[in-house]
Amino acid sequence: EPALAWAYQGRGTVLMKKGQMERAIKDFNRAIEHSPDLVYAYFNRGLAQLYLGNEAAAQSDFDTCLKLKPDIKAELEDKIGLARHLRNTRKE
Image 1: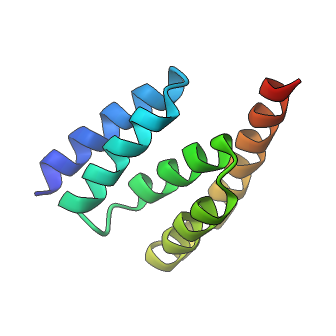
Image 2: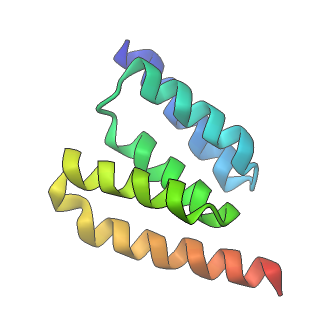
């Protein structure tokens, strides 16, 4: 159900902004279960995975994003750079 997928996507985004990456990933997973073509659920789950250092899982999500919406590449690259920067600053 797309409406439920968007609800999980929205809550996951809020959790991600609060730094609660594991909980956010669970919500993005639920969003994808309800709507497997919801690009931003993959997009944000990938960013959360990247932030946690799960490079392979992140790359898989980013690949799915690009398959579903090829014109998202520039936006995705910007956010990937930001997520890596935030992860690296967190570790210092």
